[in-house]
Each structure stands twice: as structure tokens, then as C-alpha cells.
Amino acid sequence: MFNLFNIFGQPRYKGQPTLGTVRVGTKSTIEAEWRNINVLVTGKQPSQLRQALISADKTLDNALRDVVVGENMGERLKNARTKFDRDLYDKIWKAHKMRNALVHESGYEPPHHMILKGIGDLKRALLSLGVRI
Image (cartoon, rainbow, N blue to C red):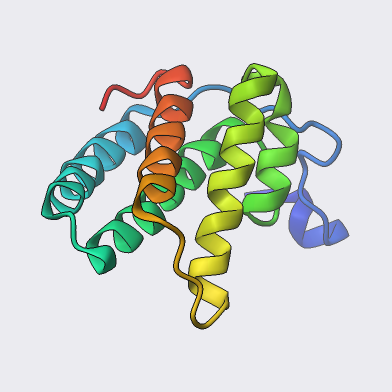
């Protein structure tokens, strides 16, 4: 099959940040993952809440892969700016930054209520993309 990426070294969708909607298969995967997130949240242990936020961020990234282009979550979030209202978009970024700090900064321990808020904001983002969780 003819593939422009192989010939020119760039994706054929270059310059087209929007792809479409979240695919049915992706929605099913996210719904299953969200059941695990709910179990982690109900456990209320700090390590469970941290893992729930990391997983929630990952599920949003999976949805964004279907919706917009980008090499990484940060690029996909930038390209998805028009998919969310401004307030929610800012909250998504805060939750993603919290996730990054949890993963990359030793000793970072946000209060549990901030983690729960981040998880809720990521859930709202998925709902606004049409994923039922």
C-alpha cells in the first residue's frame, strides 16, 4: 500500500490537527479502564488515588489519539483546545501536569482532594468527547 509517511518522513495528516471522534473500540477500552479507576478511587489509599489519576490521564490520551493528531499527550491536548470549553480545558491541563509531577518528581504528594478533582476533570473531558463512563 502506498504510504506518504514512508516516502517523505512525515505523517500524511500534517497540518490537519483534527481527525474525528472517539472510535467505538477505544470507547470500550476506556469504559473498562474506568471501572478499574473507580475501584482505585473507592479504595481511598494515597497510592490508589495516584494510580487512578495516572490511569485517568492515560484514558483521556487514548481518546485524544482518535480525535486529534500529535506526537505526545501535550501536543494532542494543544490540538484539542477547541474540543473543550475554556474552563474545562484549563482543568485538563492542571490534571495532566499533576500526573506528570506524580510520575517524574520524587516526593511530590498533592492532597487527596486535588487528585480527586483532577480525576473528575479528566472524566468530564472524556464525557464531553462522547465516552460514557
